[in-house]
Amino acid sequence: MAKPKRINPKDLPALQPADDWVRLQGLREALPPGLQGIPDEKLFHVTVSGSLDAPRSESKHGVSGSIAMAWDVFRHDPKDAPFEFNKDHYFVTKTSGPAGDEYLLHGPFRKGEPDHWLKEIPDEYATSDLLVSRSGSSR
Image 1: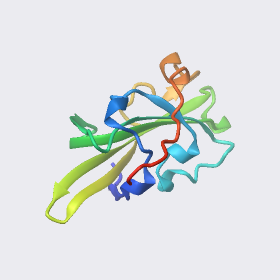
Image 2: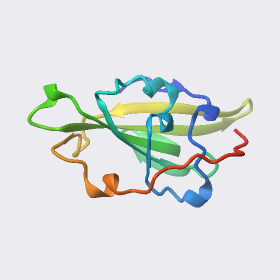
Image 3: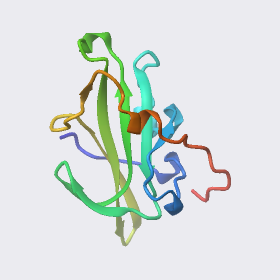
Image 4: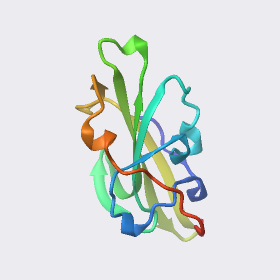
C-alpha cells in the first residue's frame, strides 16, 4: 500500500453534505492535483462521491477513519488487453487535531478490487449524474 499523501482541501471538488455520497461523474478537474497528470489518451472516466463537511466512518483497504471523499478512475491502455479498462480507487481521510483538520489521500487500490480489470464500464458508473461546479465555495 502506498504511503498516504497530505492534500489541501481547497484542491478537492466542493461536494456538499446534501450530495449524500451520490456518485457523480467528473472530469480531470474532479481529481486531486496529484492525479491530474494521467495522460489524456489513458484517462477515460472519473467518478467522485463524498463531502468534506460530512465524512463517514468507514474501514477499507486497511484504513479506518473518517472517509471524506472517494474516486474511481477508469483508464484505457492497449497493454491491458484483453481488458478495455482498469479501475483504480482512491479516497481521502479527514482527521481533526489541535492544529486543525488534516486530509490524506490514499491509493491507488487495485489488488483485492474485484472490478479492477473491466471489459466495459458498469452502468452505475457510466450513467451517474454529472458533477457541476459550485460557485461560492468557502474552501
